Image 1 (cartoon, rainbow, N blue to C red):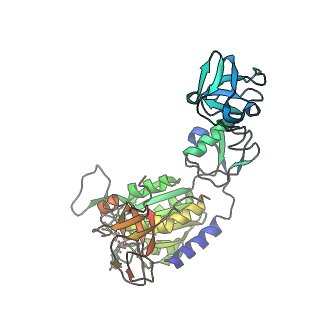
Image 2 (image 1 turned 90 degrees about the vertical axis):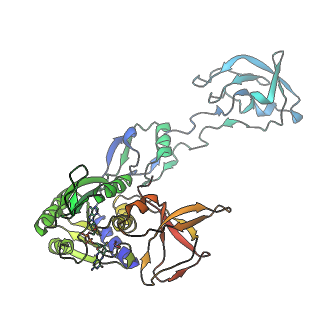
Image 3 (image 1 turned 90 degrees about the horizontal axis):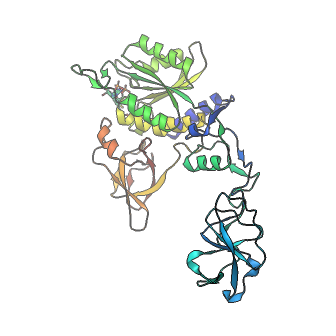
Length: 410
Ligand SMILES: Nc1nc2c(c(=O)[nH]1)N[C@H]1C(S)=C(S)[C@@H](COP(=O)(O)OP(=O)(O)OC[C@H]3O[C@@H](n4cnc5c(N)ncnc54)[C@H](O)[C@@H]3O)O[C@H]1N2
Ligand code: MOO
């Protein structure tokens, strides 16, 4: 399997060499997009010193040992959103609410619950008050001019918050990779259609699409073509013209109705057919161009679980490269198995598992009883794919292995 990844990534590296350009999107549409360039903070965060607690603001230089001092309290309250114009003389304090800008010179807040107000004087009841306590300093989160977000960052909720805090109403992002998706098979019917004898519904089209979109791709749905070489060639030609990569499902192996490998060979080059892995053995990969640009094609095996596993572990890292996204599909956990398992040496296996947290906080993977490549239900029940390495034939419960949370599972 490692060789397959090398071939795929080398091909993608060559194809990704050209500049993908970038586009400007409103912040409200930026979730999941990939930042085109590092973002330097145009302003400090927070933009001004402000109170972290409701309480009384004072100067740390006025704090006496033991907090025995009582401070005269100025009239009024400093509220969030009010300009900190009011001067507070040395030795005095002022009531202040969380988020309000600290008046000039004040740097410490005594929380309401740690003090009493007696005859216009503030007395600390729960000390000691540390100099600078409960005051958020200008720029302590992000200094003005510092890198707030790195280039290539796939924007998540907190990133959008950072961008909003920095007044970025629009963001320069990389274009989404356009991935053409094609189902193949005479037996496939679309959900809602009558199910003719011997037919099944096209589940791959929807499950694969969900994974691709969840990972930031712009899916170009090429629909479903029958087991017809001509129709397959036409489908691939459409993909070449309108997408950066093609994902086709089924027709990948050597059966009488499996035309994908021949079509890829005829339209470009078949670089890989068959991978030492389970599920996913018939996976194929190549490039097609027809008369258009050169586009990588991932030929996923038809069995639904095999298709999703191959998309996640073989196509996923490659599509991540296409999107310049360092965070896509790379997450894995180290886990141990709940029970020892034996496997055939010489192929990497990806059984489905539920993850349980042990008392020491580590994860234990319990392999599902059903591991058939057509059993979508067991994939739906699983939390992760466990990676059982190619060279091993027995994995005991002490050995650490990688587990990949299933993409598209939330
Ligand atoms: N003699 C051999 N037969 C098979 C081998 C083998 O090594 N020798 N490998 C098996 C494995 S493993 C898989 S996986 C499949 C892969 O077959 P293909 O990629 O050629 O796909 P098909 O034969 O067309 O379909 C396989 C299976 O998947 C169902 N399918 C196809 N598309 C969809 C879809 N969009 N949604 C839901 N299900 C789909 C299809 O009906 C078949 O049941 O080959 C084995 N055979
Ligand atoms: O790809 Mo097949 O099992 O490996 O279904």
